[in-house]
Length: 302
Length: 306
Image 1 (cartoon, rainbow over the protein chains, first blue to last red):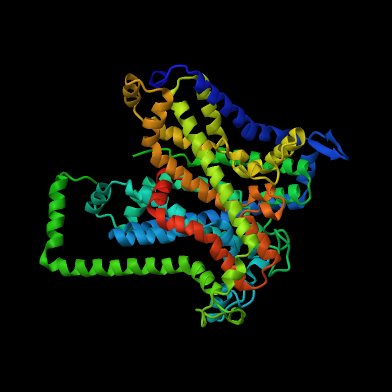
Image 2: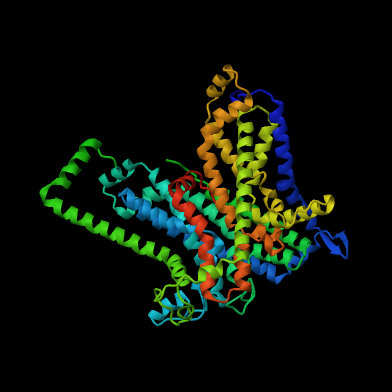
């Protein structure tokens, strides 16, 4: 490793590294340590006092906090399979288009949703989810004499409505990764299987799926991480205009962990309590990473 | 299931069977039907994926009376552009400017620091550099959302301690991105493929370290720097949580925060509401149209996700 390096010890390089490491410590290491320390404190008047695990004890009885964990999990469980299945389906379809122009057009249009700003997307969907028949979805349901559904205004459907937005937005992202994965599978495997008389489903089940496993693992990991951290959809699409419920509502059904941390810290100004929540979220992320690493790592290769 | 017959022979037999006159017409019709079904499926899916854009763009062109019809009209009966000047107010322009300053400044800083560190980490030998890089890798798995509360406290602490304003400033917004682990990781990977022989040749010709970096390394990794920059710009333009925390007065809001606050406060008409979101999408849409292939390739190669 060392002999590959080109320049020997060099003062400028050391200065650059030292400066970078200092900044790294300030913006990436110190904040985590500070969150840990802050989570063990409480504010008493103008004074900070150490309270040990008191904040965590309160958290374990905080029904809204517990619900926010459950909401994040539910949201992830709703959105990630959707992104995965839709992304894979799109990739399989687009991969069969041999005409390069059409292939580019389809890839480009499915990917467009991923590139456009999430905030504007959420604003758009909010308009389509209008609870009255003025909304696009209720108008479409009206055509077949169904609905209207109170999408974002009902405890049953609010979180699901937000998950649908995510499937729409990130399916194109998953598709691009799956397309790259599909192209890495050698054509000869399929030819060999065809000679052996494997039908389309068998080829998909025994060649495509196992060989896509590394891509799938990556897409699942990235999607879980990002869905678990959901904030923007709730912030933009719930509360405020067109609705009677507050942000994160109705009845806390769209309050995810990050939303809860934000409101606790910046609307109720309880920094210590929000830090304790951050620490719990950090631990949850750690567990998720370890489980993913253990279970999703490819156990064999071709 | 490998038979004793050689594979070439089998393929030849299959090809012969496929080409036999009795089979030809059937296979061809089947292929054609399959292709039509494929394009049909993609067309329908494409229409579904495009529907939200269609809906919002047409809504922004409808008159107020038409917008309040129930059920809604499927296309604008009378097209009007009146909502656009209503939506683009001076406040809205200010949000746009803030977004551009924030996204642009972050992009430039990330590109500079990541490239420089990528160079230092790959071409200089130092134990310290290796430890630093391990820290960078480890921190990549911590989502930025976790940093929001402690980083806010940090800005507050700096502001109180030194008197330098941090909250409600561009500088405060850009601050956490000075060291961007993902960017450093990406540029390090890119620099690894720069051959040392080139640097050797430059040294023999008497080039200084700085000159080798500037004239040899940088031109070779330019596509990687460009990809990183485009993505950082798009992501920071889209970001809401961090700017929401730092920007406390409405004159510092970027478009993401502004769009939400503004529609909540002033826009009661759907026309303005939809026109504003169309305008907010426009810059990114233009970038996407110009750099579509480049952006998709970048994602496919690195799996970047903001």
